[in-house]
Image (cartoon, rainbow, N blue to C red; front, side, top):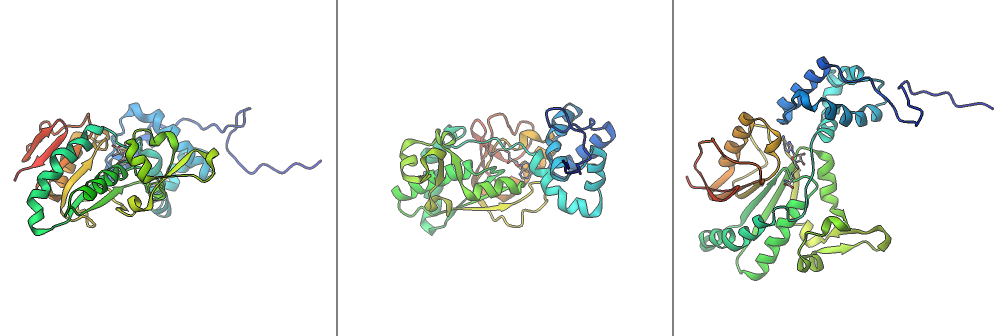
Length: 296
Ligand SMILES: C[S@@+](CC[C@H](N)C(=O)[O-])C[C@H]1O[C@@H](n2cnc3c(N)ncnc32)[C@H](O)[C@@H]1O
């Protein structure tokens, strides 16, 4: 009997899993510098194992035998252009939830929207919201549900939502807007009834965000490390939650200053529960822990 010759050069365990030699310190430093300078994510040596295990996926996808071959490819002219987005996909942490830190949404509806509306209504201006680091879409769709509901109750309230992320992979799934049923658990029941579609095949236990909510969110790719956010105009409310926690203090400060530039006077910045402006001198006033208002 003839067996198909094995093409793959990678070492394999008895269980059929591929093994790679550990990432060398030299290659780790090259990669960590690249990651930190391009996307801002801090990569101390304590993250070496994590980086290694996340890169296994890329080595397998590219059929590369070891980390030195991966680095050689990545730092080549061709590899740099084509591989970088995939590297960003595997390196970013995309954990998110619908109505995460729900107090933010409650505060937005009860205090912020009426206040913003009283200023803009005489001129009938549309309010702009930005979910920066939107991951797979749960945050901007939570915003869209809340804002649409508000617009149905309050005459003259018009809004637009931008949602951006560096990872093309998460943006693709955000646009698709299909989630496991249990992911939708935190969505208030009234919104579930109005804004979720169930899969026709009930065994799949999937839900999809209804088109009237999907169409309210414009998704685009944006690296927050860029100096100018060309696609962004002035915002009334910016959500950038659980993103800067992965960055060093100087980069956090640079991003906060960028958000400040893109906020209208009187606009609001929402950060994640463990992110603060502590020590950054900027005219943003705390209105709730991790919620700030631009005053000047
Ligand atoms: C943990 S998720 C937070 C998602 C959501 N904001 C929330 O709080 O649930 C962080 C997101 O930030 C994105 N991200 C990380 N670095 C970024 C950068 N330099 N530019 C844009 N997005 C970035 C990641 O791809 C990831 O989807």
